[in-house]
Length: 326
Image 1 (cartoon, rainbow, N blue to C red):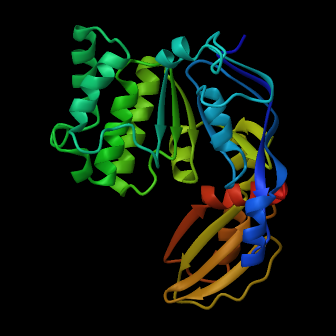
Image 2 (image 1 turned 30 degrees about the vertical axis):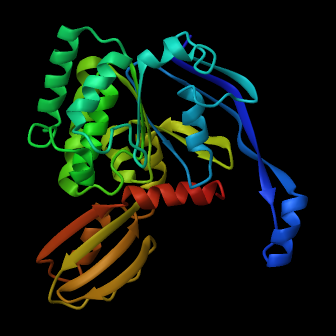
């Protein structure tokens, strides 16, 4: 059986339904109307040990519900879920020792004391042997560059500093699986790079399995080779990021630096725009490849310089959303 095995899990919630207005607000005190919402419906996937998987989808798609079931916080209404041989919500006491969880918008650190003091508390919670704890803690402090602020009260830390401490706290007990929910939300470029580099190194050295949920597609591109797209509570796509790019990354953005006027029309040229020092083109490389396009341009103008960019990951994901109408 796979390291993480999820088979047809579903979860519904009962939500209060009330029209706006004072009269309806008063009425709802005495009689409430409800509707049943499918948070997730028949979600299935398998993840092998050591994989980094991007679990993506729009707001309300069911990502957080899935993660809460996988971490043992919620119980599904139907279906089965086994991780490292454990059923998370039935064997939670034993299971939690094998997972680390980081929620970008929720903290596990005590607000008024330094992060290192929380680390000491977590040592007792997870019953980590003293020698092992000191070794792991010092290693995390070094690799996540925490030394300068690990003894500062958490409330005085910047968001980037706090998130790095959150990741360290989730890894003190050396888990096999790491759930990351928006781990770089609101972080500056330097902090994002530190977090991404650390996760890649952790995965490479210790073969830790990572499930990453985020709206920052740069995180997905930097870390995950496989993505699972969930929309309207169901899995819509499960495959490699490379395959996804090959399907949607046919648009090329080409800046031509030239003093000459370019007046050409050809199949595959989606857009032409005049710039201060030349032209900007968008071409469909499946219709006209880059070499043929540049050859066509060179027959009509002297090219001083050229810049070529691929479709960015955000646009690729938007196209994927559009295909599945979510």
